[in-house]
Image 1 (cartoon, rainbow, N blue to C red):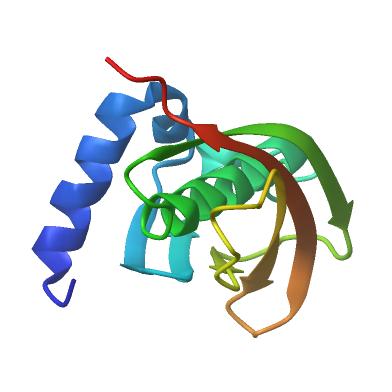
Image 2: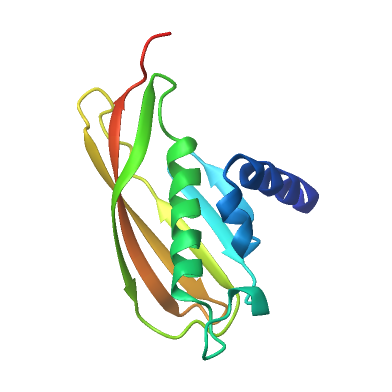
Length: 143
């Protein structure tokens, strides 16, 4: 995607499919096999009691980045579901945030559990969160 309006329209469609993501008003900036980049603004709606970005808002951003990376990468005959999430809050999130997720393409014929790593950085390029979300990969049921 290279059109900013296209990014917004695509993100809106994603949030209609999975409405909880709309709570952070994200923007899917880049998505391709093996990679995604998703951002969110630091707004009052995502603040915690100390006026930084709420931990769960950042977890939501991590899950969206993971979902975009796996959706762009997984073969059509496979499905995924997250079953574990480990997240580390490293610094206060005091600015807008960008999450990236990189995926090394596995052997889809043998993979069962797939950990995906997500990094969240602020506008100063400081990493504020890291997360690993492990997915269970299985064959889609035949229709």
